[in-house]
Image 1 (tube, rainbow, N blue to C red):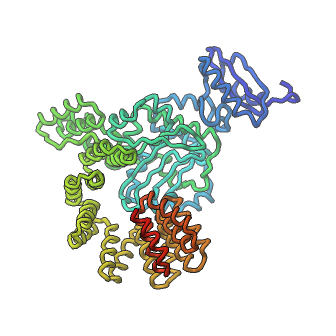
Image 2: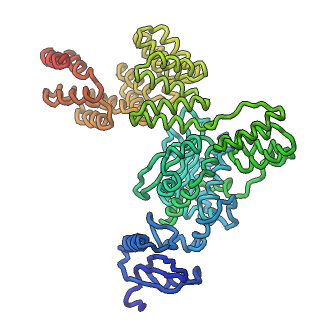
Image 3: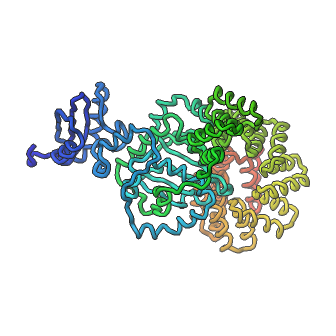
Length: 633
């Protein structure tokens, strides 16, 4: 293959056993030399000259065509992402990749020398130090360490160049702040987070290959049942189609998820695909401090050093290391400890092995240990709640009720409240009231909030306010907004502002919007802009409307219109109403009425009446009467 004729193109290696390997190369002679070092059974090579810009397309076409003809390919990746030749092969050889992909998952992280970039380490040290003070980290580390060991090839060798881990990244920091995120090339494959107001929780969201999971679990409902509950969602990424997201709550459940059939294979398929695409694009945020904790050999926890196998089993169980827990429970049960037999029953219940669960429960009871059996759905309330909410959004309330009830059985007090909200929406007020009350009595403020809102609709303001205060005492600080609104109606403006400020301090965006309205009444433009902007930053599009009204008061109608239009495009019907008012002031009644009609269709039935009131205030009673007539039609 003379260099003068060109050595850039697509090649196919044929091996003694009939297998093929499709690849691409800018210099196929050099590439063939590399393959000879990896494979000792190459029989033939075929080569086609292809322009460098078209290598990816031709390579994929060749792979798909050969697969369609029934040939067995040695390619590590078959049909997605960057195929064949990859810079990764110079770091982890193709043979190592194939061997790793087919291997049994191991806790061994390797002994490769890790990279070190002092400047990057220093730049991200403060974020690592923030994470190091998080009480949740100790339980999360073993789970993330297992993910690295089981699903990323040579994690120490590929650290920084192919994958990165960020400590407390800024993603969704005002609503769902993250503890950490692992990124391969440009795709976040694992992140751990919690809702802003519930920072004691840890929710693991894992991306895996969709096709692999579908091969193991054609019906997602089977996956839910086998695991107890795992929230499953198809994700669309431009960088890599065919991604499935699995979500569970707690490190223990994440460890269990990795043990579920097909999950590690699907994670490996996606991860290998991504790191073959190219270098880690988020290397600037890589936390070497966090990686130190994950990749350096950890000390054996003191609770694993004791002589008591039951204690060691309980410690492993708490971390989600179920195989280790099962081992120690069996040892303890063999020495005559009935609690260990009971714990084995619990484990087999979780694993849906009813026969073994019954055996061990019976043995524990025979030896005098009578415990409270754990539900198979224990600890999976996040996924159950997410599944319920998903079915609400899909318009399937009966299935949503089923999942809420399962979440209740697994110990969720929030599920009672959410069930109450759904039942109330379905018109089942009596059942909703029972659900709200049970949630409140179990200590969840959302239950008292729901009950208070029912009393307010009934006109019982005194009892409603008392229930809102119970909700606040139970931790539902959003109820302060409702209390503040009731105080405003009574003319207790100072008390109302204090309630709004407490809610704003707890990061309720609607409270910031209401504080902006108060600032407007005081003619404090600076404070109004600050509060409206903060409401918008935290996700409340009413902030756009407030900012638009400030601009309109300044005489900047174009700026106001832009803000109202942004609010309308974000789905806020108040934006449409304000656009209608703006055009009515410009005497463009045709467009004003069109926006009113659109607002009414979007769920703002008082749009015409509000516009009429505004026109009366502006000294245009005839125009106001016109909209009053339209409103009554």
